[in-house]
Length: 265
Image (cartoon, rainbow, N blue to C red; front, side):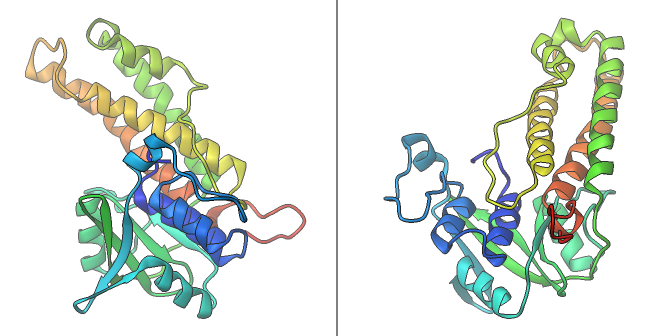
């Protein structure tokens, strides 16, 4: 649970609650990053979950702070049925179409959440173990394509593995080489009811590869020159971009495949 970015958790569990697939307690557990409890069961948080989970998510606006669940309740009352996450970066504002204030803050924080079908968005700011969500106006954007993002991620993985092999990655980060060549690897990810399995699989793969990229960029390893270090970074940049695009698509229910037998996303 703690591997999921805050915006991914809000998008997944918020959408599941807006659509009536889970109850408010399970939604809150999911948003905070705790192991969600089934309805009617005693709340229990494992020691690791208690240590890693957030303690609160609040919406901060005009000098006041309200629990995020109240904001979700207002969205539900307005007929909103989906929340989408975006993971933009400088030069690649994936999942966003402005305005400039939203894009700039989302890029600075690395993520944002949009209420689908509205002009509302929120950017998270971490304060210790709490998350403050600040609202921003948002332009509507076309839905991402989950299948396309999945294919892009696989292609970027193969290209990065080939490029780093040519740069002899095994001699400076053998663990990176091993992880890149394990095409089946993925981080274990919990997801609420109604989340398509393909979205869960894509997020697991993307989180695994994001960790691999971070591992590879911790230092210059055995780089013999600044130029070689730059080439290694250049080899990883397309994979990092594909990871963010995959997370955005997998956490955007307007881009999910239709639910079987319903035709609804």
